[in-house]
Image (cartoon, rainbow, N blue to C red; front, side, top):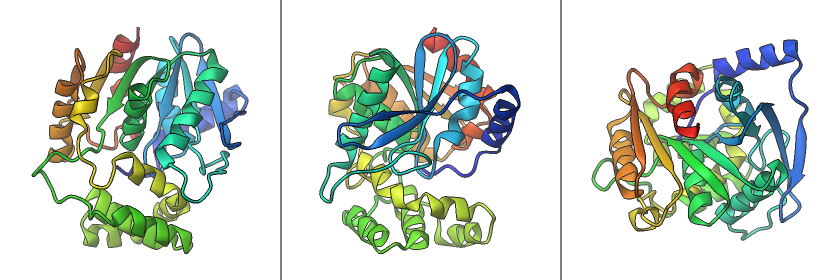
Length: 287
């Protein structure tokens, strides 16, 4: 569910700066939250939704591969980057993010397609299932957990995560999310702490309750709800990712009527660092 700093995004950002990046625009969500976004290219709009620990920069590479034929729209989910967060205590995290997407779609011309990576993919599917005007939806490795595939997150994990975030403990929130929600072994998380990317992850930790809320208490696959989707859908996964994610992708694709399923050779959950690997699958589907 996590995605580390994307070197492709840094390269894309440098190129954009040299060529004149699109202006940063904003739209106001239902609760007054300001959502910041940029639109690259021409053609039908495709909103690109990052997962946990992501801001809009991690989708710049994907926007670049889409831009020749589509308008790739990158945005900061609420509370990240240049977006604000006006949610009150007790607010429904998922509903607030659906409102954000609704406002963004409205600003782009009342309809759009969606591509979501990881928990951003769950948000994309929720947008479709909740009736937003979406033309097509593509997702990469949505982190639903198939029954028996790996230990489920503790049922109280979401509330504990919110409490840790409320105390301002960024390191603790990032650690809990990675170990319990993503399933990263604790020794690996400790190794991550010693690496340069940890500061970036910790800086995004305050937004993690939004990602945890998307999967529900234990991230079970909502197969009964997925069967109600009538929007054209594409489900993608890499063949080198975790087994449970590969299994989940297959179940999600089977659950959505008429969904396409693509497997990318040699790719894992870090595909955003290699956006060219997504070009063919996304452009063929979105065309």
